[in-house]
Length: 98
Image (cartoon, rainbow, N blue to C red):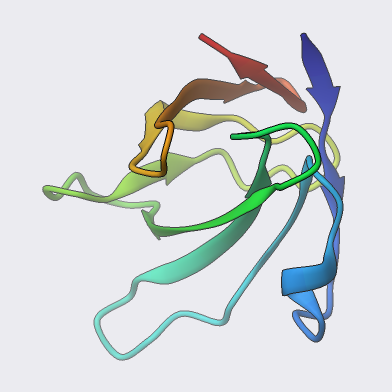
């Protein structure tokens, strides 16, 4: 099932966002920014995933983002350690469960 991604400029109430919604913080002093994603890990019980994002270099445990808020792509895939775990991709503006 593919879910279209929807961008939020304001992170207020991010815990109440529906599945597929996302936003991001301003970069911290190390250059990382944090992307907040609402994931579909259980029916009627979405989970919030917070990904550290880098744009200009690769580091362990951080994702790349193309910067597109209309149709974002994040790499690599996302493995969210919930119960049950969720694994999937955000590619060209769609959230796809693997």
